[in-house]
Amino acid sequence: MIVGFAWTLKEQLTPRTQRPSFWSQTKQVPTNRNGEFHVVFAGGKHTTTGIVYRNCEVYDATDNNMSPIPDMLHCRYANSVISLNGKVYSVGGSWKTTLKTAECYDPVNKEWTHIAPMSTDRYDFGICACDNLIYAIGGCKLSSVESYNAATNTWYTCPDIPAFNWHCRAAVIRHSIYSLIGGINGNSLCNRFDSREGRWHNLNEMHRGLRNDSFEFMSYDNSLFSIGRNCSRLDIRTNKWEAMPSMLFKRYQFSAAIIADDIYVFGGMGTDREYINSVERYNIHNNEWTVVDSLETEVFWGGAAVISGDFNLN
Image (cartoon, rainbow, N blue to C red):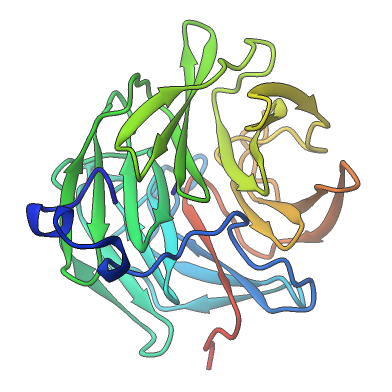
């Protein structure tokens, strides 16, 4: 997707000012439209042959250019990808079996290295970064949560989410982690975890007319966005879901990211099981979708993460 659940006893007794620095932001990336933003795509699979990839590419949102970077160490699809402190982490997923392994890409050294594996193998799960920790949340038929501390290369067990199903995504607003779980009794459930409090809370259920079987989930300011066949937003101040304009193309198992004031959607598969190459952009303030680019590559059921600032491609 996307602290309190994961501290060891030593960390619990450590003053908050001495714990890892606060990293999460209300907006997941800076909103400077003149800044540099790169989207890292990792893994995925072929829509018809089922071949699983380990290749990675970077989309430069400034000049709409796609460039390759070194392959991951393992083939993965339905994996989750997150950026933290200038590095990219690709976690879990599936290849022949469900995976618990994880790896990290350093743009300076331009290489992937193994990190400690999760305690649970998981795919199609939420991932997010909060208070300098990475959280892996839920996944297919899982309610478990664990967090990763890069400084110690250790995963810690966290309190379970209140419900589970096959598809979960996560996002962060300030100190709170939000998980969205699809397809439970016809509704999608949203839960909030406050890292200072250490408990999950149920938010308003999404109306079944807005729910999606396949979706991405992200935050901007005080809003959470569910992007899928149906698109909707939740204002956390009113705890109310409302419909928003649909994407221009119906797509499944796509990737999405917040860049400045826009939501970008990449790749995925259409109802005809063909790749969708268009890049769509939703302007949050104008409340409308436009097509802004066409990918030169096939992106389906892999992971994606945004890195702001310079990215070494040479």
